[in-house]
Length: 143
Image 1: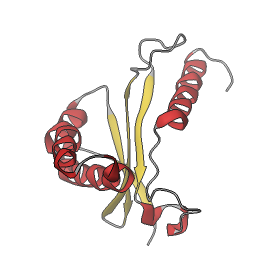
Image 2: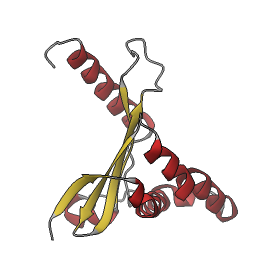
Image 3: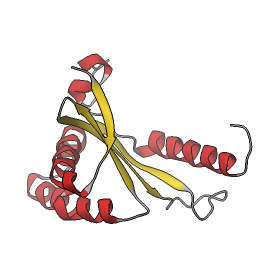
């Protein structure tokens, strides 16, 4: 089945919450004591935080679907990175998660975690590069 991307709406809040929780557990679930994980997930990726994000006019979320099944998502919003070149109106890539089963043709290379977030040093660099590219475009410079 083919993959496609579409912008999430408030009608997608439950599906967004489900994929956010599933990919977070795949990636970081072993980093928290079980008793803390559930509370953390509900506080950050439950239906209410997702509804707030989808309702925020400064935020946008796209869903990656295989048929009608959500297999990943991307969230972007107002820049919160403390960067010298950051300007009002810049955007930031907040999260990009895809189920392990849909990465690299479903075959992960090497003994790595089962889902790869855009986080940590790599994520910061990617977000910085995205921000700088957006700044250059905004200034009319070639990127």
